[in-house]
Amino acid sequence: AHVNTLSFVAHDELKRIEAQIERGYAAAFCDANVQVARAELLVRRERGGSATQRGLALGLRLGVAAVLATWLFWDLVVDTRVLPLPSARKADLQYAVIFHLPVYRLSLAVASCFYLWAAACSVWKRARVNYLFLFELRDDEVLDPGAALALGTQQLTLCLLSLLLFSKCMLSELDLDASLFPVLLFLSMAFTLTTPHLGWWRRGYTASGFLRALAAFFSTPFSPVSLWSSFVGDIVTSLVRPLVDLAYSSCYVFSGEWLRRPDRQGSCHAAICGASPGNALLTALPLFFRFLQNLRVAHDTRRRVPALPNALKYAVALLVVLFGALHPAVSSGQ
Image (cartoon, rainbow, N blue to C red; front, side, top):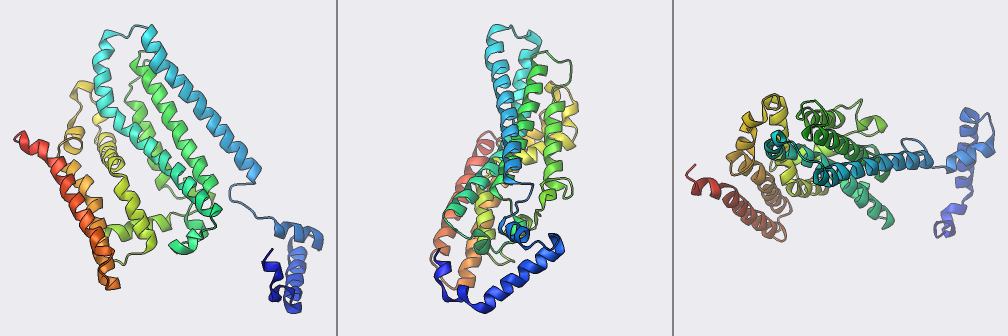
């Protein structure tokens, strides 16, 4: 309403340009019908179909996820209390929790990232924060809230379905190798996130903004620090456990360890999880690069505050993390 009170809105030349655009659009797309052209120009087109179609698709995905969650709860909580568990499967359950839980935890973390990004974008839009301008991004470089919700629900549904089938195998209701389902879940997740023409990029988005920020983050201090790369760096430092799960899942799947018997598995877990150098390295690297980012900011801005206090914070956190990750190994004589 305030824009309509400005003097340039009522300028004759602006009205002439507006009428020219309407006539040109009508001649090209609306059979010279100016009224239809005006109506179409007023409608904001969303990626992935209309708002109604996207709402129905999201509701369908959420309904499927709710059904799978209820079914899984019944199998794991109710059936295990009523039906006797075969004694041969009790030992396998211990291995299942140790060796397969990181894959499902990683899948749920990916779904949570989509949901949290959707929530952040929604809050920014309601507060009229132009986050694309602040992050120096194009509109096609980030997901909008609707697409992020859809992808998060899709990943959640796949995770619940895989976990349900995995539990069926562990309860001897399916005569299949239980390790097959977490492997398929990891491969489908990797395929969706890394294939440009078949993953979520097909909705009109690219991953260039996020990948560019990741490259800038891991090439610190040789690349300048922007608000977007700093924001992505904060996200990476908050995803230490999913990063460890990603490394373990990659090792578990691509090394072929899942093809072994459960009692012969564990080499990837020993190398990456627990009190191991691999775990310490994956936990400390994000903090180390955030430390370097703050040093680069202090160098570029020629200001000590707040960059150097933040660098000190990450340096202390880095020491604490390394001590906590390596102390059990040192105390046990490894």
